[in-house]
Image 1: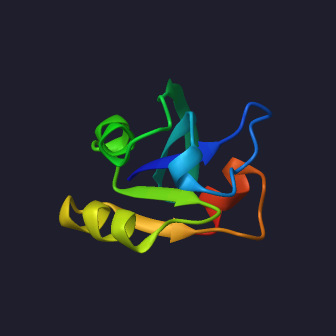
Image 2 (image 1 turned 90 degrees about the vertical axis):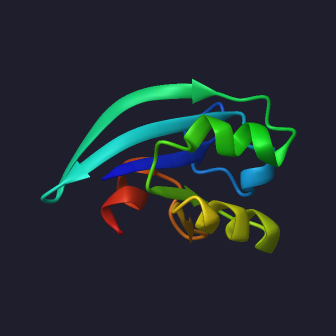
Image 3 (image 1 turned 180 degrees about the horizontal axis):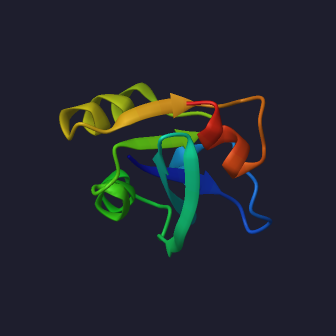
Length: 95
């Protein structure tokens, strides 16, 4: 499974997906997590964010608006809100 995690410039899970400018992309298979790449987005428009993660099955962020959740679900992307964990690998491991 391919997972996108919205992060800030320090590499911590960002509190709001709509303001995300960086995604860390991971794969998770049989409990093994592997970092693939960082992706930069302009962080301004829902369509740009979705375009940047449309190949992922899950996106993790601190907050995700209802409209964004609905649009992600239409594309088969599960939205996961993670308010407690700041470390991306740990957030992915909690799936």
